Length: 370
Image (cartoon, rainbow, N blue to C red; front, side, top):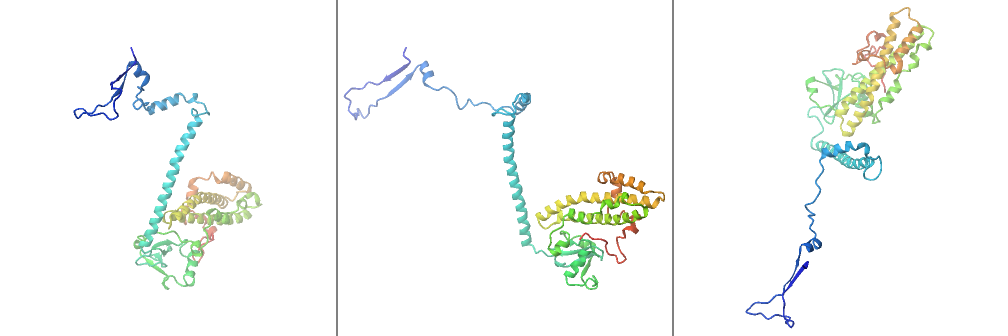
């Protein structure tokens, strides 16, 4: 039986090009091919390409298979290796990481622009305390300088070197009375607390210089540890003099690091710009370990000094052994309780009062780190 049947309508050989209508009807020539079963299989594509797509793999099954085959997968080679999986996943993750970084950058830029818009729309001055005013809380020792409508705590307060410098910069003499001359305005604490804080005011703000790093300040006033080592001395009396000098330096180091720690803690929140806040946050982290180290050192020296004052029979050899124990591994074995006694401006002085003499008879501060 023929595979393909062809049926054709027969027409006369001399049929004119234009067929003459008969009874208003025109004859049309029609051809068509007929296929048998075998012809259909050979001539036509019977696959369902649109419907025959593979089903997606189950995610749980994929990871189960991955765990089962983990050690069978070669480390390198082609698309079926651990290296290929790591590289393709890394490219995928980096794509999203770069996108997230760009989003964060743009969000930061938006925040900075919004801050600038707020500054332009809102006058940067307090309605009752104009910029350039100096305020104090009920004539207390803490002074605040008004700038951009915010109060800036003056480092060291009164009588500090920053205030003394600022006072002269404002056109006054150091000897001029702060309140009689109207230089400082005493302000009720409840009013002062309602004024927004700005960054703390320091020497670099007055002189326009760069801020010193906590490390550089610590190096400048850091006690020379070797001078506190009893091995360098022949008598208790000679060593006591050297130790008292090291205690004074260690005290100033701890006080100044604590001051910086408070400054950066404030400025990381109240800095004027995002960049200022980021810098303060970085310096805050740098200052913390330096402050802890300064407290450990001061605690160790205080323990040795107390031993000298309370024990008449102590020897240089005994002090050397104590010194080695306390300073071992950079004072690492000093307990937290010994460090914590120095938290706060006047805590921890105790029986070191006569040694430290942190405030002289005029009430002025001792050694400054500037």
